[in-house]
Length: 80
Image 1 (cartoon, one colour):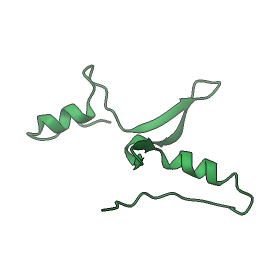
Image 2 (cartoon, helix red, strand yellow):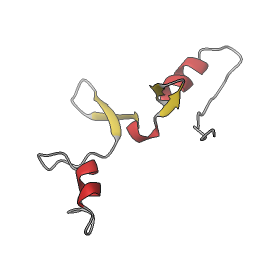
Image 3 (cartoon, one colour):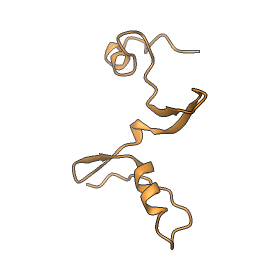
Image 4 (cartoon, one colour):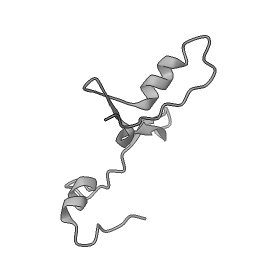
């Protein structure tokens, strides 16, 4: 199911609906060998680090490479 749009908010509609009518959920997916979608991350969770857009997943994957780190979760917190 999919919503038809935000009530009386055309600017919000244009932010989430593509011109061809597809709903942009913000999910980042890849396809496996059987062309099944695999959820990877959320685009809307991107953080800004020194002017660069960074996914929490990128940081988590890098941190997991360290032998002293068993499990990691990255959460961006606004910094004034």
